[in-house]
Each structure stands twice: as structure tokens, then as C-alpha cells.
Length: 422
View: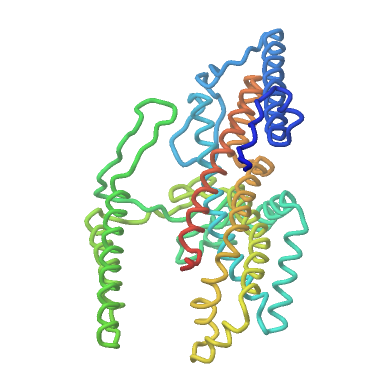
């Protein structure tokens, strides 16, 4: 009679980290990681020692020194007596402004161009092809400078609006002035304003929050909630009876009427720009540098988004279009209700990359004199203080944070709209 027993287990030996295939890959990864960390530590230590030898140890105290330069386009109050940290904060807001405006405009243009490029109309499809190929094959810096030159050379100076028989006049009911110094548009004002909330006191990152804006946003949110409730009730009625009640005027009313009442109570009116002296005064001034950068980034990125939209639409089976047409839907409804919702799962992932590219390309703003975070912190501040390493590190941290936030928001949106399989 034979008795079977388990084979004896091998005792672990250090040599198994190299000769045993079960441990070899982990050993190599640990060694490579340690080598990389040692290399990074050596670079940081060597840089710090060299900077100390030059009398420039790493120090961020320069952010508390007066900036002593002006920023022409800004969203918050700022003067040359403010600190470099305040100047960098203003520049960061300018970067976020261009990125937000550019992403919105580029998305609208890109979706329209991408859909029209698949049009059955030969002329429209070819014109959209020319637009895409023209913009995506020329560097965006050239488009920024080109649009800036067009704005300066073609628009009239403020002096052209002066006199009894001026050479130029304001448009849209004498409310908007297009000049070679920028565009002047009406400014929203409140005669019975609730005031502002001053946050962070005298800290360089201080900012004000308008109570008027908060009230309007709260009323708008309440209106949208009521509108959604009316829609849900209409869905219930349709599910029960088969007939959908007409509710559009109720939904429009609960959103618009409260907003109008709040605007009347707050004394809403528009501050019009007017020519005084050598320039326009009053209203909101949008400088040509902001407009040129915004238009160039939007048109350039829209060309890439259009290709993403076209690829997403072409990824949907033609049978979907034919089935929707068999149900009696028109081409516009087929596109908005059937094709685009399915194409989003293909469009959104590359769309995230385009948003990130647009945000990073906004660092070219200094070419037209727009003071973004690169122009302030990475430009004038760095040249004045001589703190190259600190400024570049902060600049990289700002762009990294912005990109990670955009990526996180868009990935969350992608997860919320993608098809849920059972």
C-alpha cells in the first residue's frame, strides 16, 4: 500500500528575487523606482545647492513684494501697488476667463461644423472641409496674431465717432462701439443694489461676491426646479392617458417671471458707453487682445472638435437613421434625438483633450499683450524678481491644477451620459 503526501514547500531565499520568475518582475520594479527617486532627489539637492551658491536660495517671499506693474484687462480690483501674488491671481482669473469662453464657443462651432461636414449639400460639406483643413494645419499662434492684426487695422479709432458727421457710429441701437482699442458693450447695473460680500479681507486673494448675482442665481435655480417639476407631472399624465399636456408656457413663466420681478426690484439698468475726451467711458471694455485670443483659440480648437463630432456620428450605424426615419422623424430630430446622444460616448473622451489643449494654448496670450497667468507670474514677475525656478514651479502647478479639474469634470460628465448596459 502506497501513501501520497504533499511535496515539501521551498524555503524563501534572497536569490529567488532574481532567479525566480514569480519575484523577478517585482524586484526590477522596486529597483527602478528607487533609482528614479534617487535621481529626482539628486537633481533637487543639486539645484538647491547651486541656487544657494548663487545667493538665490529657493524662497517664495517675493510674492509679498509690490508688483509695480499694471494689468489692463482684469475681473477684480487691482493696482500696481498690489503684491506679485495679487497680480498672479488676476492673471489666473484671466486665464480661466479665456479658457471658459473658448471651450463654450469652440464646442458650439465644432458641433455645427462637424454635423455640416456630413451634409448631403456638396457646397456646404466642401466649405466645412476647407475650414477644418485651413485652421488645424496652421499654428494657433499665427491665427492669434492674424486676428489681432485684423481687429487693429480694420476697426475705426475712437476719434472716428466724434463730430457732427462722424465717420463711424455705434451699432445695435447706439449701445455697442467697435473700435481698434476694443469693443465697448453696455454694463449691467442695479440702482437698488444689495451690495457685495467682501471675502478674505485685505489678503492678496481677496474678492467680492455680488449679493445681486446670488439672488438672481437662487431665483433662477428655483425656477428651473419648478420647471422640472412641471415636466415630471406632464410625463406622468402622458404615461397614464397617452396625451401630453401643453406645459411650455407654464415652464417658461416659472423661470422668466420671477427673474424679471427681481430685476425690477433691484432697479436693473444698463450703463451705456459714451465717447468722452479721447476714448469711450462707461460700459464694459473688451480689449482686442482678449477678443483676438478668444476667437483664435475657439476657431482653432473647433476644427479638431468638428473632426471628433464627425467621427462620432460616423460610428453610429446607418440603420439607426433609417429606423428613425421610418418612424416619421425629420432629419433634425433624428440628429438631436437619435444620433448625437449615441455619438457622445465617442465624442466626449477626445473632447476632454481638446479642452485641455485650448487651456494650455491660452499661454500664448502674451503674444498679443493679454495678461494671463503666463504674462504676469511667468513674465513680468519673473523678470522683475529673478525667481525663475519658483515662478515656473508655481506656473506649472496652476496649469496642472486647471487641467486636472477639467479632466475630472468631463470624466464625470462622460460617466453620467454613457449608455448603461443591463
